[in-house]
Every structure is written in C-alpha cells, then in structure tokens.
Image (cartoon, rainbow, N blue to C red; front, side):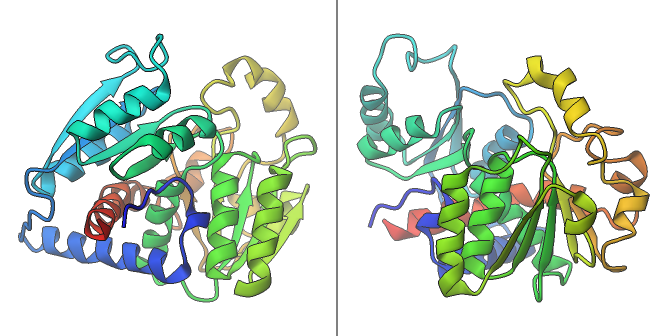
Length: 307
C-alpha cells in the first residue's frame, strides 16, 4: 500500500517505533562496516523550495548509502511554482522516480503533491510540520536511554517543531510542556489534535508562557531558532518578545540533573541557547544532527517496503 510521510499524526505508535528501530539497525550495520543496499537502483527526487544544510546532506547521503541515487531539484531547476500546477509536476516526477522528498513552505502544497503522486512523498519540512526531525530526535533519546518516562520541555516559538513535538507526544503518550511568549503560542488546531490523541495515549500536554515553569524537572529540554526561514524581517521584534527564553545554565539547572538538551539546528548562540549549553556535557545536538541521516534511511526503507 502506498504510504506518504507528511505528518506524524498519520502514523501509529507501533509504526513510528518500527521506523526508528529500523533506522537504528541500519545505523549499527553502517558503523560495523556492513553496507546493505536496501534501495538498490531506486531514485529519490529531492525538491527544495526552502534551502537546507542537514536535509539535503542527510537525504542525498542516505539514498546513496542505501544503493540508490538522489536528484537535487531546487525551485530554480524545475517548473513547479513557475507556471506548472503542482498536480502536473507530481504526476510527472512520480512517474520517473521511486520516492520524493519535499521541503517547502505551505503544508497544503505537499498535501496536494502527495494526492497526485504515484510514489511515497516525504515531508522534509513545511511551515506547519517537521516530522523527519522528530524521528531523529526520538532516535537520539533511545540511544541516550532517555526514551522512558519522558518529560520534554520545549522552550521557544510555537512553530513547526512545536507542532511536531505535539504530534509525537500525542501518539507515544509522554509528557510535553511547551513554553512560548504571549502571542507566539502553538497553532490551536494542532493543539486540539494533540489533546484528542492524548485521550487514548495517556500523554500529558501542558502550555505555559513562563519557561521556568515548563522546564522544572524535565528530562529533555529542547528549543529552536526564534525566527525561522521567511521571518527574517521579524527578527528584531522577536528578540524583544523572547527575552528570558534563552536556555542557559541558570534555566537548565531547573531541569532534571540528568536531562539532555536537543536542538534541530541551526542554532543561534546567545539567543535561544547559550554557548555553554550547546557545547556542554548535557548537549546531544550533534548526535541528533547525525541521526537525521539514519532515521531518514529507516523511513525510506520502511516506506519502500510498504509498496
């Protein structure tokens, strides 16, 4: 059956854990010097309307290590958004490639693309969700023995990362505390979805405007840039609004003594996180960054096996 990966809410707890474990297994094989071409001669089209470091390198390297080939397609290289309807581009590219990854702005664009695609479509990021990052984040928690009895504190903007943490918590059933400044809260529709999922999963979701309340005794602390791509003109205003939201030594000290720190990167030292925390002993952000490669390989193989 054809499956897309547009948002975590389309997946069960069991499926998410399967994908993460498959990624970990493939990672162990690579680290031991064993290479298995799970996707030999398969082609991944990578469509970028938003630029990226980690998304491009991880997907392009990942499909290569799986025995396939990646095609980098920026919005300057194809007709998408320059006169050709999304549905036409979807039908053409999906007739030639085995899988498609899209990193774009509007989530509605990737939904329309998937509706007309003959092959799996993967969300490499939209303004609403960033589900592949959460696969890497959860994989990192498993590796660092922090996946049990999770209490996650997200400190920062109510953006696509916040939305994705809400989806993961709602499905897996852990405690998530979100602290945002007034006026930068999470999407109420996404929050309602998370609350609905929490009724069956047992997740505990709390919303704060004070980061010091959210972080108390948390086992995982995470944040993101205060001004995402496309919000550069708001940066000065956001710097004022987010005053007091930097995860620094004083704030991190309120978390559990064994807490770890996550950040999807790029990180702006001295804004959402201090240099001492990002480079400190509790930070696992560079393990997390590497796991984008391994989690996405697990995802691509899993999706390919469903067909």
